[in-house]
Image 1: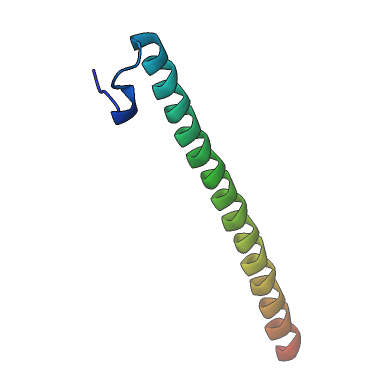
Image 2: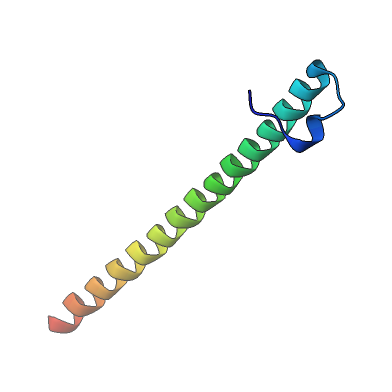
Length: 64
């Protein structure tokens, strides 16, 4: 079993709680960062999509 440095001298039950808390904190941070990244990527995609639509409309209206 993987033993973290702060597990030395503690009971096994407390060690398990500490490891679970650390893992939960780490994965919560990763999930939160990935959600923020997805939101930022979607907003950038929408911005580029609207910019592309505007450029296409400008080109087609200029050609007519």
